[in-house]
Length: 186
Image (tube, rainbow, N blue to C red):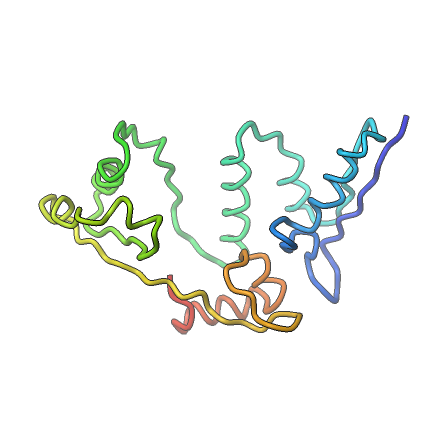
């Protein structure tokens, strides 16, 4: 029986928690796992880690990607000391689509404001719909999010990477400080 053992240390001194740091669009640990799977050489692949949180997240058998995403969001919220309640739209029994669904979600949570982006993805639902929200007593706020600059390990700054990149380059405490000092705005 061929077994692949992939080490995923959480306690690296030079790049803490490097195994979940994003590299070319995936967490670094994903690369050796994929290669081991695609090789067809192994009956079992074991991820060996000293980081209990990473082990717990990776060991869960999630049926849907959403479940893994929620676990990772909660993990990063804990690291960054963000105490915001997470509500999935599926919990709200909203049966509409598009702009109507967004409106019904805001109403279901008794919101009086809706924060939307100014990018193309947001605009397809919002352009010309301000009155729909206004008539329901919901103020629409538009945000032009600018990705915050932070020092990265290599040459030029690359924006729009994941929170993993920011955590590994400047650390959780620095991110928390910058959020509290309003240098990073959401």
